[in-house]
Image 1: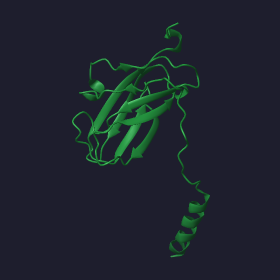
Image 2: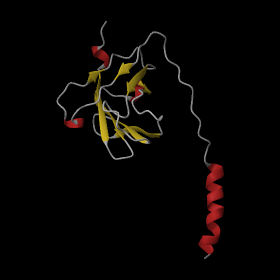
Image 3: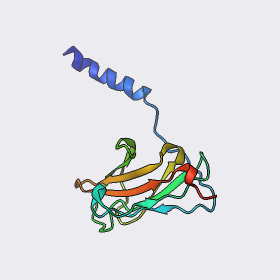
Image 4: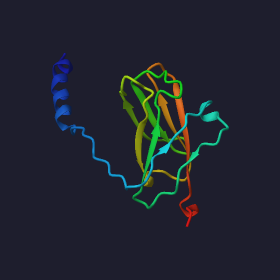
Length: 147
């Protein structure tokens, strides 16, 4: 009974110590076009070649990735759980996105180039119905950038 009485106190303490969430502004270099990711038909088991990203302009470069969360069929149901997966299978980033009423509209994700290692990555989107869509892409080696 004592724990039940203290529950509102712990809730208020946690609520006051949590920082308010806010979105930071994003800056993009002029003239850099975003990369459109294509949905993989068979998910991560697909043999189709994934999109290869261009070499970043520098360590402070940003990749602008565009994808359709509802997939090519446009049958996704918001909210969407979006995960960015590294080549070794661990999650680099994840978020939940409510999405607009029309899930066929493209969404843009900005990812700092410094957070991505060379190799095959996946952007995984799961909708409210549990349908998983994968958007595969390859981050090139920095040394392999064209001169």
